Every structure is written in C-alpha cells, then in structure tokens.
Length: 327
Image (cartoon, rainbow, N blue to C red; front, side):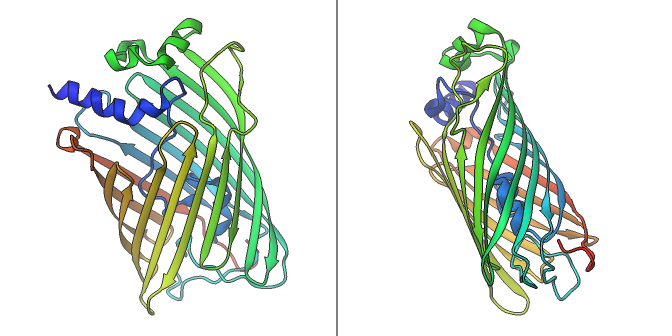
C-alpha cells in the first residue's frame, strides 16, 4: 500500500513533465547561495564561495528524489564593499558600492546530480556575465550559461511509473543515456538591498550529442527570482526570496522563503513551495569563513503522512577579501 501511495506522489510531481527530461532540482534554501538558482546572482555576493549541497527527499523510500550540487561563484573586479561591523563575512546581502567603477564580472560554475527513481540527470554549468553600473547604487548584467547535460535511466530501478512514462520509451528506443549541450541566459538587476533575476531556460534548444533523432525534450521556459534585505535594527535583518518558474505545460512553481538573521552570524527561516511543501531552516557562520545551513521539509500533499520528511544540508567556504583586491 505504501509503495502504491509513493508511486502516486511521484506521478503527481512528475506528471507535468511526462515526455520531457528529468525535472530541474529542488532547493529549499534559495537565500543561502542565490547563484544555485540563477548563476548571474553571483554578482550580488561580496566574496567568492565554494559550496556543497545535499538534498534527500521523502526519506525512507527506495526511489525517492536525491540531489547533490557543487558550486563555485564570485566576482572579478567588483568595487570594495562594506563588511559587517563584527568583522564577519557578509551573507550574500546588502552591499555598499565605493568609487566610480562602472564594470565588473559575475562568474559561476555548478555541478549537479539529480535522481528521481529510475531517471537521473547530471549537469555541468558555466556562467559569465558583465555587470554594468546604471546608477549610483544600481548594477545590471546578463550573460550565457553554457550547459552540458547527461540524461540516463537505471533499468534496475524501472517500476510501473517509469515504464509508463513516455520519456522511458524515448530513451529505451535509442539507448539508456542521452548527452546534450545547450545554453541558458541569466540576468540580474540589483541594488544594495534587493535584486531581481531572470533566466531564459534553453531558448536556443539543446543539441543532442549521441542521438540526433532523440525526441526527449528539455524543459524550456522562464524563471524569475527576487530577493530583498530589510534591516530591522542594529542586531537583526530580515531576508526574503521569491522564485517562480514558468514552463509550458506545467503548473507554476512558486517558492517563497524568509529568514531572520542575527548579527550577520546565525539565522532561522521558513519556506513554502506552492501546493507542495513547507520547510524550516537554521544556519550560521562557523569560524568566520565556513557557512553551514540545514533545512527540513514536509510535504503538504494530502498523502504527506506516507511520504516522509525531506532533508537538505549546505556547507560552503567563503573566501575572505583583502582591501587591496577590489572584488
């Protein structure tokens, strides 16, 4: 009975994507490193950051979704920016620009492994975008994200749900592994306290490497991400992030997260994924340069009691800047 319910839950999540590639990964802590969602948002950070994220969804089920990500993001040539009065590294939040520098660059590299049941996807993404100064404290930029993707299926994990998915039929007819190259376009406009990001997903249509006749589809659409930081007092800040994804033939994917930050060092937050889940997160800085965050998520579907909890862990190293380096 439980297995049947679990398969139904997967069907609910994957139904809009039937006949397409593996859905993009989920992340419940968008504010921790916005470049995971939109690589151009690396420009909003004051520091280079290398991080690892591990997400296990619906713990206790054999074919439950799992995601692992390695990311490296930062800026080149960014003007000196204000650091927290405590001396700790700022947390991808409000930045004061100095000088009259009119151009710097945002760079991001992501490695992503995502699995749901028998279906798997691995992505390598490299992004660059020039950031142009539009006003005293306003910058904007847009650039390409080059993407190499591998879609594959594990025949040992094929169940009733997978066997009746059109994607399985397409892959089976031309091999268990499909490789593709493509490009996204990611852009952002931001001020010291807010940002608005826009991503065009696969607008030029991916090119298949091993099977030119493949009918497996890669999701094409638009993703919007917005964030805001509000200083409550000398000790507390409130951060909020909204993400909405528009893909033809699928429901809107709205994520909302908020966190309360104490002295730029520790935080607690909540999140909501429309018609899907709620989450709670805690995190902070460890010995100044290391950032650690944990989120637990509970499905809001009517069968949530059978799905189990989801867990997400993020650990990163934030490279310190020197005053002589104008990042």
